[in-house]
Image 1 (cartoon, rainbow, N blue to C red):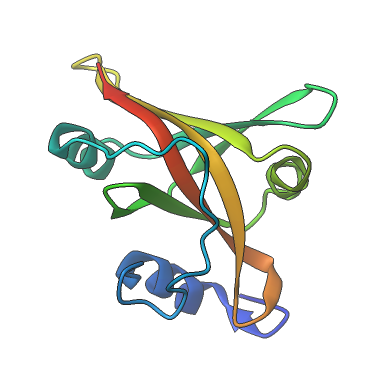
Image 2 (cartoon, rainbow, N blue to C red):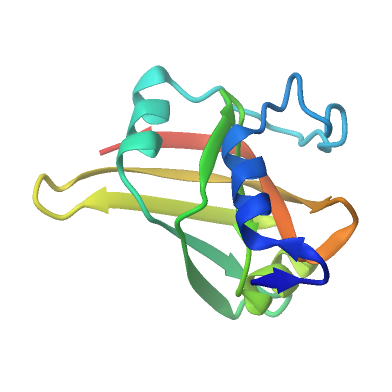
Length: 142
């Protein structure tokens, strides 16, 4: 499956292997007023509990929730996920970059939640399959 020439498998591999500090996008993430470093506990929980539910809202406050199996930890201040078939999520992030994400295990009732400000990062100029980098403002486990 391709979207404007970028194979989805290639994009997924790029996301899972991407390193912000050493990656091709170094320096392209915008700074936000309030950043938080995620604890090791939160980072482990994000790796353990998937998929994530990502919540956005448009400029008028209309919410949207999208399931994101691609959400990954980039470093202790950022997570990243792909927009593959979520036009409302992309539209909302363009209008209102504040995002929340959550995931949990139904049997143990454990999970994680974070809030942050999103930056849209395109992959090799492709905007259909784009990457959202979330600058984490607050993160916790439960």
